[in-house]
Image 1 (tube, rainbow, N blue to C red):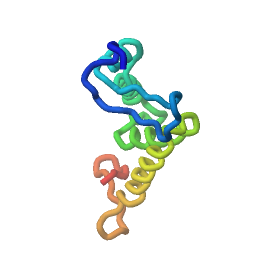
Image 2 (cartoon, rainbow, N blue to C red):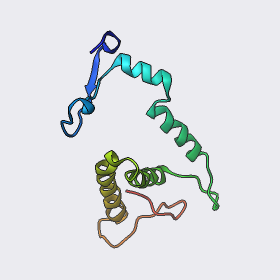
Image 3 (tube, helix red, strand yellow):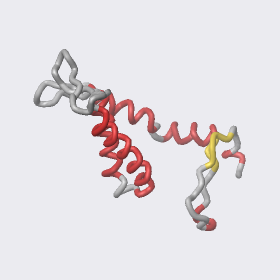
Image 4 (cartoon, rainbow, N blue to C red):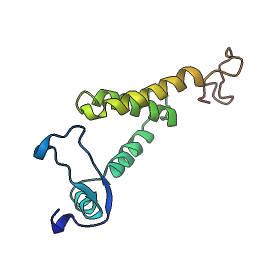
Length: 127
């Protein structure tokens, strides 16, 4: 590691297979993070910017996206992007399983026959 990469180690990215010199992955240090964040917008800032755009959007019914809408969109988008970025595939599948499990099991009351509804809007609510 040269002097420009010295700093507190935050973590170490590891390639899935030992691919020799081409598979080398640099340690993630505070200095590396600072350099990258100075050059490009961080994933957190990108997510906050898109979140703000989506939260301020209104669909044709006059409805703004709620938390569950945002979660569903995020998981489905991860799945779509796993074709472009194969390293997302496993996490996309796991997240999708959680969301669909919650979708199909989360709306029903304890008697498994009654769908819970938001009393003000009449819409289904996630439990």
